[in-house]
Length: 166
Image (cartoon, rainbow, N blue to C red; front, side):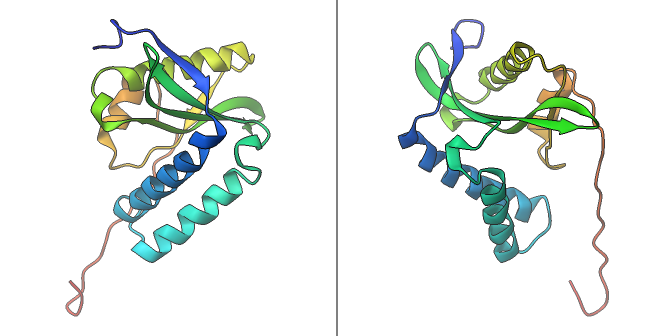
C-alpha cells in the first residue's frame, strides 16, 4: 500500500495510547541525543526525561499541543505531535515528533503526515511549520527538504583526539 492508494488521516490520540506514546518518544529522543548529539547514555536519558516533562507539563492536556494518530485506511500507522508556538514574532505550528511505525515506513505515510500537519497549520491560520531534526537523520532531512523545508540553523562539532584518548 502506498500513500496514493491509501486514505491517510489524523485522529486525536486516546488517553490509553498517550502513555505508550510518551515512553516511545522519550526513548527515541534519548537515543538520538546519545547517537547524534554526542551525549553519554545517562545524560541523554536525563535530558530526554526533563525535556518531555517541560514540553508536556499537563500531559495530553497541555495547552497548544495536540498529538494525533496517523491512520491509513483506518489502520494506525504512526503518530504526529504538533504545538502552536511563537517564533520570531509570528505564530508557527511546531512539529515535535512524527513517527511512522517500522512496518509502515517507506510507504509515503511520513510525507502524508507532514502534509496533514501543513493542513492543520492552515486550518489554524498559521503560515509557518517548523521543526528540529538531528544532523545524522538523513532520511528525515531528505524528506523535509523534498517537502520544501529550508535549514535555518546548523550546529556542528568535531571530536579532538589526543595521545591519551581514543
